[in-house]
Length: 77
Image 1 (tube, rainbow, N blue to C red):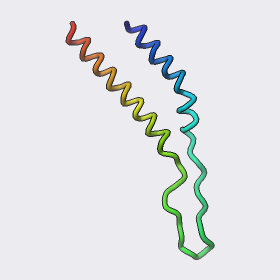
Image 2 (cartoon, rainbow, N blue to C red):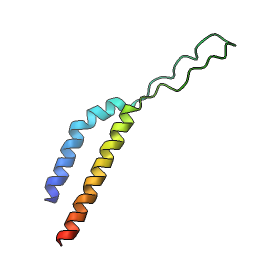
Image 3 (cartoon, one colour):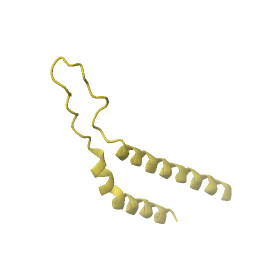
Image 4 (cartoon, one colour):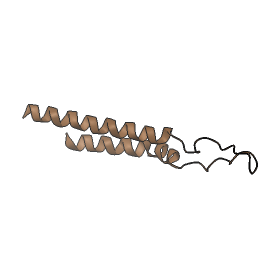
């Protein structure tokens, strides 16, 4: 059972890794906007939030499923 779970996690990682790699890189900073002395500075940067959010959600799901698996295993012992 342990080998099956390990192989499923490995296959899922290999399958979804191109999606994660594409979203990890941040964009270049935006133009400062306006000319010199206008005081117009854009808000925020150019980094995407979606890639990091997807990674954190997937890691949280993996961590939660591991905790549930360990709890069930402990109850069955």
